[in-house]
Image (cartoon, rainbow, N blue to C red; front, side, top):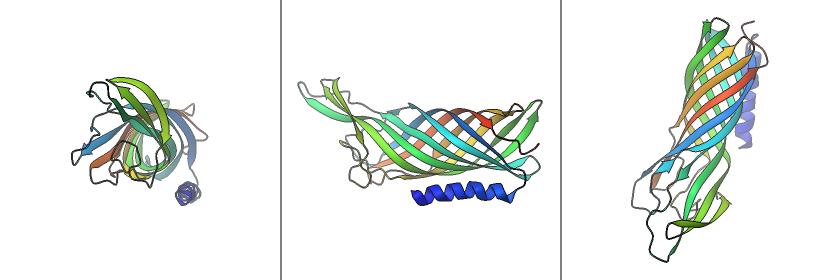
Amino acid sequence: MKMFTLAAVAACFTVSYASAQVSIGFRGGYVNSNLSIKQTSTQVLKPGTKSSDNWGIGMVVNVPIANNFYLQPILNYEVKGAELASIDKQPTNAYTTAATSLKLKYLTLPVNFVYKIPLGKARLAVGGGPYAGYCLKARYDLSVYNEGRMIQNVSQDVAFGSSPTIANTSMQLKRWDAGINALATIEFNSYVTLGANYSMGLLDIDQSSDLSVRNRSFGISLGVLLNREDW
């Protein structure tokens, strides 16, 4: 994890020194995340999930590479995950436990190729590219039900390296993630930015043979540029 962090920071500073006109900014905002879970065998865990409301912050670097074309790496800290399917039917007078919520705290590095379109007193940046991510920490809620009614809820750390990593499931989550990212950002001449992005994980973050688990997230961010590379 430390090597990944150092490599990401080094990459940002390397591209900064490689060009005389580079801009740096910061952003933060809302992340709506979900998990695409597919079963490959019969398990207690149901594949259905609901999206989860989370957040993220990041540092953006704009590096000109051609006329209106830019390389835009973004170093993010963001929370992903989902609300897992709860238990609907239970035996009478029986107590049942189930994992009901999962929060994955990632350090991610999208490397986007963007094109910036002048719009009066602003520019519209559109593009996309690959991303890599490392889960720094994760927690989940373990709920106790009695005849369909939740009577207790306990938050626990995901036990990476264990089998399973989440109690009462067959999940064996791993820390690394990778996928593709698309974005659209308005950069106002006042140095304020307003953007939206969608990330789709292509790497199965579950090591078990029973499930396939991939990250999905949509974000809306508000940011500020410290300088403008075109001024």
